[in-house]
Image 1 (spheres, rainbow, N blue to C red):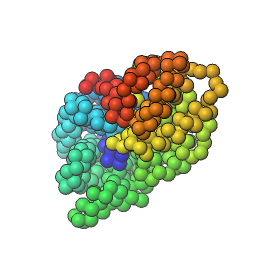
Image 2: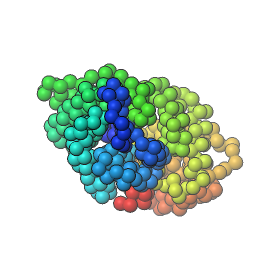
Image 3: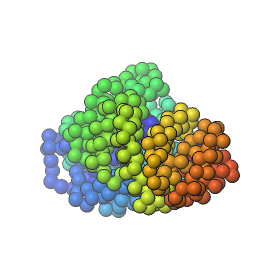
Image 4: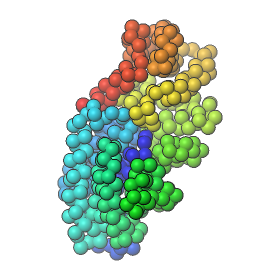
Length: 409
């Protein structure tokens, strides 16, 4: 998870607006939410954080089908695709159809938001400014990812202008505070954006940005869960403040009990904080989910392995850190009756050793794997890795191939 994905992940803080009684500006706390929209929102987010990306997109697509002229559905779908791309290293390269859908959704959200912003109804107008700002924000993030820094910066400035219009019209619109907070944080935190901000007279404020994101987490019934997810990224990846990250991840686990992603993140945090027993217990819980349906779990591996590290996935530092955990796990479980859990521990340890060019040790691990109970295709992978190194390039190739089963790329 990198900071460039933060602003777009905040798109998921929105909710599908529906017509209703006119409201005074002081009564507008965020987007209007229908019962049907709330159900699709909850399903889409639950599927997203369960790493069932195709099902998540289907849920968000049903928001569009409920009301094709409403900009929020397009914003949701774009946000879901972008969050997936931030977790699945190389997604847009591997699946250009998803990139095309993302761009089409951003364009549709902008066009339909403009119509909302022209409404006489204050709620609809505020929603229009909000969606316009977030759609421009996601366009800016796309340009930032492609290293078009100047275009990204000016698009971001337009986004902030629209979000400020939203808050001026409806000061209590907490979702807009989330968008403003992320922009503030990024502009101060990312060196290239920060330099452009100084050059053109617009500075970010990291402290203020974090305060706005925390406010949204604690006060918005629709944005709270996404603000929590954003904070977890900042605390883990940018600040490396694992103590502050842990309660946020525990909150997200409570909100999304079906998510293997948040189980994985809590296991990682507990390991970093020295709670080894807690970390191992959580990984055992994750294994039970794998064991229940190993084939269905295959599409989730790319996010779990590479979601935090992106282009650095399985680089030496990344692999060394993971190897430390597996060494300790195998020591802790050495006296147990062998199960598929132990098989995977040895298989993954072997692949980490291969990624670190420790080939002889890796082969020894693969030989242990085939003598243990099989789970999914572990024996097949072990034989293949004995025949040819499962080095970093091969592991990433396979992880991407597995993810494309789900994306249809």
